[in-house]
Length: 573
Image 1 (cartoon, rainbow, N blue to C red):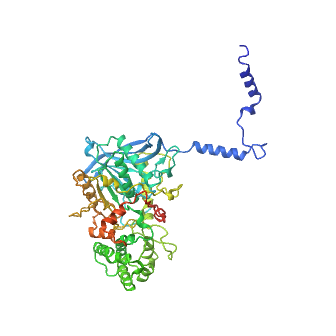
Image 2: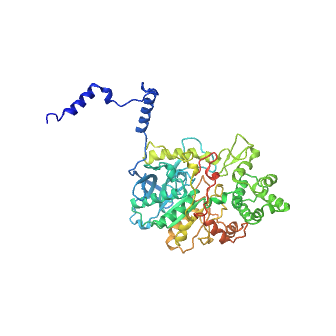
Image 3: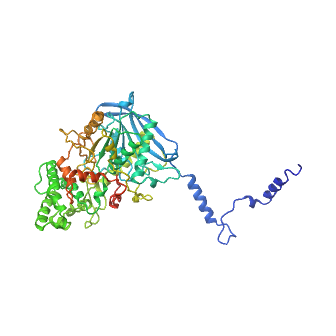
């Protein structure tokens, strides 16, 4: 027993006698005889950076503030909640922190009759800042039509067109955008695929509904641009997981990116009415009608009839007909006959934006073609940037940042990502779809859908043919209410709807999305069906629509063209 502590005491004595043995080994140079000071300093910097790294929270965050909204139904007290939702995989492991801002009316006793609507922009790769700051939230950026917004201070205040009087509103950022981030061993790019993206949103929505006890509330999703593609997959995923939506609202829809692949002429047919409206606005049309609506209707009829038939003939189109179509096309687009002939009667969006006002060394905007920009190279083929994006982005981003801190009191050192472009493999987004995007509606006969588009917004044209006609019965409305009342009339009537889904297309200039200015422009059914039916193989409208709706079949992957993923001079949203 007397030797019990001899070995520990000897070890301690050796350590005190030789301090170098207790110290951590320092980096040495290649010869191993001198410490490498540079490497040691680099390691210290890396350790300091690691300690200061702001990481997304695993524990859910929520900061609530109370306000009063001025709506068309009068003043409404509401709670704004900015926070995060932690979504987990099937084994309950945290995989992402999803940022959201929710606006909920106060004093609601029966949530079974209070709808909740989830909003998101598209991109793919965009945050939801744009819908949040410019559409139906209680406050929004105040903009003129169309005008470059001057530098700060910006006009930001009450939105009298808010939809808070009809529904609670939840704005959600896609993972990898805004303050939404992956957690643990997951990377943001793990969620950048069609199904992966929709899965993240499905888990976030179900988490919000569970956390806030809203399972009995009517539930709607509102997607814009690529967000409409997401809505098709998302609605089906939610249905499969036990959440039956009351409705889907799609704004500036694009439900099949395959139509942008080379060899498909439908995109030129679809864009023509938007080209006509743009040419009319910029006074490039000889002898135009007094109102743009008449001119756009004439363009629709020409696009669905003679123009579509001419493109379908391809190289078999005879020279006389080619010249005649070019003359008519010039009258609608404001482009020269020689240019149209050189382009084989097919002018894509970028070329149109550059060519229409080339004689004035100006380009037209992509999101709103009333805006004009100036390129350094007037001889280029496409605009160097998007004039409409440049005109408003500064105001939207600055207003959001200020609003989050001063009004909602949500503060974090994490940077807000307006867009995921340029990060990791964001431009290599996986695009194989497991199933048809419209499958959710197909399985929910009482799921109602409303489609809207912007008259002067070119990325998703106003005459774009809805690919969901295979599972929806179109009915032309007898009246033309404005977009807001049309959308929320849908919500009020959703439980009484028949199995026929009603889809109306409304115009929405990007800078003033208000109830009063968003007049409805419903596509004639004949135009919609002819757009889908005039195919080179002579299929019927229903056959064409059914084939287009099958965009998600695993045996026929539908890759997104890189052109649709690469922004030109602006942030996609």
